Image (tube, rainbow, N blue to C red; front, side, top):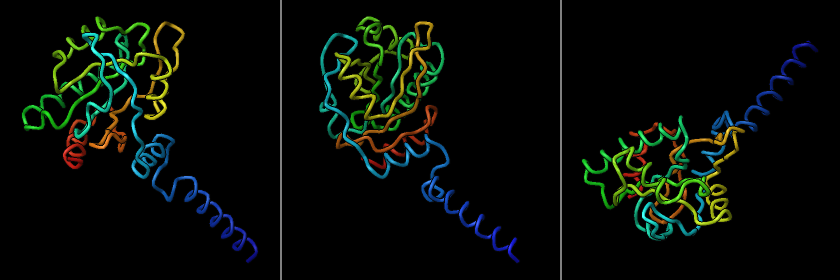
Length: 200
């Protein structure tokens, strides 16, 4: 009997730890917990100045009233950034075809402003059909502004020791009030469009 009672206590403590550690079984990974936190507690995107592929300056306030699908890249990235670019290329086609242009905007932000100037952003944009009003290619104008954006989106960027970066990749969804409200997988074309429609 003592063995059964001890086993029951251990199982109850284990179940309680699992419940607590997974936020009520809602998040089984750190990434899942990060995404759940954003859904529960949307956060305003920092009002930083951003330079575009032509050298013009804008900020997130210029997207007020629109849903923003946001990605972070660096133009020399040979892997995941190209995947994100292809995803956004597909999303742009859907935005245009479904009449969402003007209400949903794609924003690609480089986290490597030392190497990614307007010319590099323009060349990167051309790889995916070019920049237009539906898809903007931007970079923060200073390191503190970049850090503020990355912190809000919880994007981690680490030098890879070979001149590039290791970074997490996702589609960040910013609502019409300028708040980060969802974080989606980097290839979630259909989900991104469903979420965007639901926020309009």
